[in-house]
Image (cartoon, rainbow, N blue to C red; front, side, top):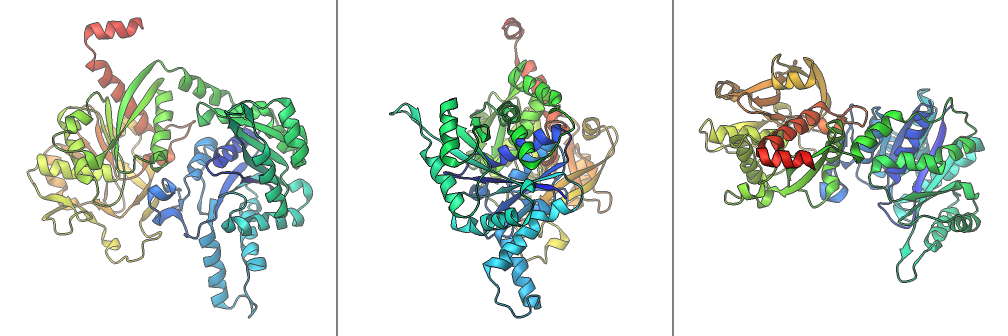
Length: 548
């Protein structure tokens, strides 16, 4: 049977429970243990698939097609292993399951209540991964903050599991905030004390307290927190602000988080944490040899979490190329024919991001045209690829009214059209083309050079596709379909043959980029952008740059 670690949060949201959970998992994995992480979200949506990115950040898609919380992206990027449908559970899914059972008569006429029926279902899902025999440790992150009404059933389920399982089989890690008051010039522990007290009142006492802080905690302050929160001083862990999330595992190792967890769980690890590759990545990340400016054209740029996986993929690819990737957000809704050149001036590469709906698409199309005509390295993802196809149809093929039926159902040239099986779909949740699908790559193409193989699998999340009725016209004019689904013939990759680097993909490659395996499309896009940056330098500027 697996051991169970529960990560809760107090005082405020956005403290970084997901990063702490992923960092702890990385340390335990680096010690030779088999670890997985799951996220329990308290909202009533069945999954984040129908949520606007402004509401909850990006929707992360797993290999098996689950639409999940973005924290699962952190889990995969840190652990370099896939998550699945079982790794993300919401209140909506819990209640849906219980109500369906009630309708089937599974409860034999009993009154269905939060306790025991809802909590029993939560506990069943909390233990599900631990009963497969695949993992030594299952880490469960509870979304929300202690004290939230919607979090109560999850906290109660943890309390019951602590009572049901042997004492050494569960550990509760509570993440809280130690604010620094500038006026008083001191760190304050009272919010942490109140948070721990509130959690204890709900029947769960934390074994370890991780303190987010802007200033270092003195030994005296740690002892004070330990005394008033009823834990040992070594169980008070400092989580100071880091320059990058990828530094957190190293900081947690220095604080001994993994050591105290192993002690509490009565586990013996086979070795000390092996983090040599991780530290090599950090060195490249912290000490780049160059830099490159990339324009990210999207319509949700006000919230960085809306493009979280793309931004993290840039970090991985930048480290691989030993350069700093400076991302410049460009709001597609405000791009016009008059200002597009100005907005994209000075960039070394352009990525047009995914999205849904008609807002801002004309700005994306103008940005694509600018990149195509000026030989600027271009990378389009999902909607970004579709915009590249529409731009080519309008400005190269001469089909001025070409569009996607998502934006204009009456367009005379639907170069992007709704999939046949999607035309009868009315329900929105979980009904898109989701998860990993195979793709066959044409030999000799840019895509083949990047991937180095003919068969790949990448993750999808969309309803509209390239319309193959126009494929011959595209290829005769110089835009080739270098990747297709082998079963359906659907176009997965397009590229321009007469361009230094111009590629669009229907899938979401950013979802599979990790620290240990940066996504090759991002790596090559950054490499091409670096080359473009070098070509822009005059000989005198190049000499000056080399001297610096």
